[in-house]
Image 1 (cartoon, rainbow, N blue to C red):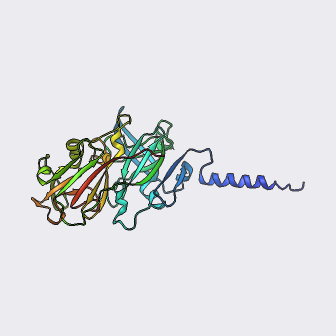
Image 2: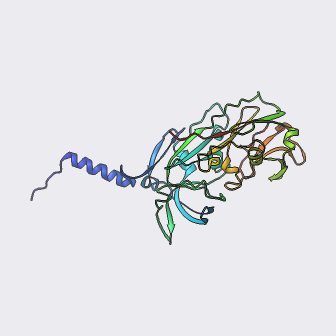
Image 3: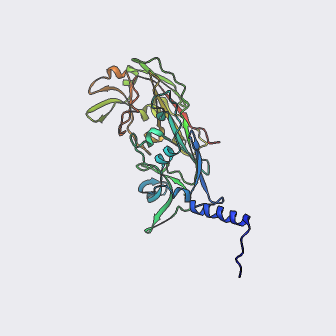
Length: 323
């Protein structure tokens, strides 16, 4: 029997179908969008994510229904964002630290992570864009209650930053408008933005807050807890219509030279990231000297890049919803 040639249109359709299968997805597969301030924004299906290096992570946290333990497999979030090219302002020093990631669920739930929190050299929060969960020894797609995609927050006390039914991730600049003062020693700093009572703190005002100490390497810092300062002294202004509104907020610290760093509120919230960030006014029992009246200290960071010296401002923001 003679060989019959397939029409060109069918050949092309088959080729397209095979190409999609090789990537692990089709036009009908659910995807998660990864965009914002990236050189190569894109969307990923579970199949496309499986083409990346797989990371398996066992986590535990507390939820409304009690203690949870899960083993997830997914793509390392920091590596994924880095591969897509994080956009920065080349004229600003360490501009990545002035940016954050907004994670959004299908119901509009949103959570902020500071880029400095995710950076392995700094905060080292090894969040995954997870697409599979191991149950009874077998890895399978994440169930519809939490999946098909879930963002993890390893080390968090409670599960509020484990964003279920994740539909998009957006990298954004902080939006900070605080200006430096030309560098040099700063005798005070202001707290402004999404706070109930904007305030200015000089040394005496800062020392009236409950004192806390943290040891970093061989140095012991004394100051006020950043969480206590924002949530207690100035008060955080939240949108009561949102679920866990504090987790969609962040603070930007600015130094007298204009240097900026973002800390997410979820990162320092005692029920979630529980990081002991400090607005320090002394080190080893003495004034900070060239580091000014106040310095942001973020214990646990691998480097001191988010230690903003000569503080002139802390602005608090609630991340707007993704478009």
